[in-house]
Amino acid sequence: MSFNKKSKYAASSDINVSRKTAAKIGLFGAVSIIIGSTVGVGIFFKNNTVFQNNHGNAGGILGSWILAFIIALAVAYSFGEIVTCKTKSANSGLAGWFERFIGYRSGRTVKIMLPLLYYGIYVLVDAIFFSEAIFNCFYSDNNITAHMGYVLLVAVAGIFFFATLNLFASNVLQKCSGITTLLKFIPLALVIFSGIIFGSLHSGQNLFTHATEAIDKSGNNYDGKFNFAGMLDSLPAILFAFDSFLIIGNIAGEMKEPNKNIPLSIVVSMVVSGILYLLVTLGQICVGCGSAYAVFDYVFSFSEGWKTAFHLIISIFIFISIFGVLNSMTMGAIRSFDSAIEEEVIAGSKWIKKLGNGKFLLNGFILLIITQILYIVILGIPSCVMDTDQIFDGVSNFIVLAFFGIYATLSAASIFNRYKPKAPEVVKQKGQVAAAGIGAFGCYFVFAYGMIWQFCGAIATNPNASFDAWGLFHQNAFTMQAWMACMWFWIMCAILILVPILNELVIKYTDKSYNQALIWEKQDIFETKIEVK
Image 1 (cartoon, rainbow, N blue to C red):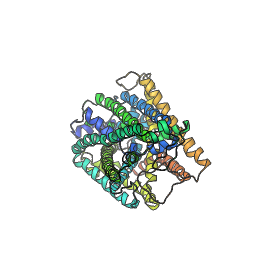
Image 2: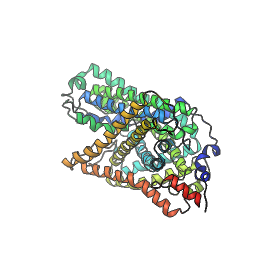
Image 3: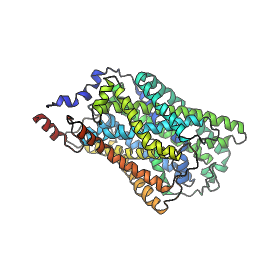
């Protein structure tokens, strides 16, 4: 059997020829999609952990967010230059940039990891939060007691809903992204202004002035002492709030002037998100509690009726916010899956392409469903048995932490790219080297700190301690212990390493006519072998 170079990349290079999708997404649409996927439910509840880690010290809490914001913004700014290089597929995004800047093997590894790990897990986790946001509207105390099995069923329905709309009404979802992005500013504004105004008028719970006396609605008694280790412990949870800014790379082929609008939309979105997060945190500090609901518990403590009404209003807006997140995430996921199938880097791609029969995004839809079934078995079944959402939340934190490390690798590579004789052409920008250096060092440090201390050293000292840093709405009798969180962390580390290898082994032993180099083979040598044949 013989092959030629054209046949190897025909599928990926002809995507835009065979699929005449007009580029309709402009700068505002791109910003809406990024903010829609980044600003979600995390900011309303993640601060509980940040407040506890920092012992209620206002400087430490703000310092945690500012430090995470600097790291995330530096990485995002460095990508403003990276995203201007040309890739084989217009929608290949992160994987395509890896291949151009670092090489074929790393690019192929990321092409496998993005759909099978990042999007495969993230879509299901966002769907769980989407489902919980629906249930939460019917629980006045914001503690969902419905069994996790029901939550999972609604989540699966949500995935099918958004995936189907992406397949048949993609333009509708793009418009929804802009609307939901605007609507999610309402609850954020309510928390910001209510917290700051009430905290200024009633300073008893204000952590800026009375940290040692404050007790929040969860019963946390803060001592107000600054704790640098608490700042570092908070960084992984906070970085979760800044992730998904590269989702725009997976729809580059559907954008107007991508070389101009993608870098600008990434930086603008990150700055807007960071300012919003800091203002919300400021409002919560003023009333001494990291929960959005607790802010209104203080503001409307004089009336149970008003308190209940605002709980419902905020619950509805949080649902709208999560609706937007799942919408944007599914939009990016299907396109990432579709690109991976077109380039045939996923085991079973040829079979999926036959099922898809060339229809736009159908390949991505099929792979999305397959990955969701896989992770429902791995994550959903144990979560239902233990009746908890802590596993989903913890796994999502791990994925974010791992991929910020991957982003950092590309940021670091972009520095060396400037001095290579045959480097990919990019639109160079001022401050790129400094931003990439800060972002890369920050991401590596956070990941190393989490791996070495949080999930080794700290847990080894007290393995049976209650671990309540994970979880969102769901409440039950189950209490995760530190050793369980450690176990899930290392399980995810193993999955991160094994999935690309297993994917390649399946291809090697099931597809004898496969005509691409696997991740342990050199591309140039492989191509020479093909040419000789």
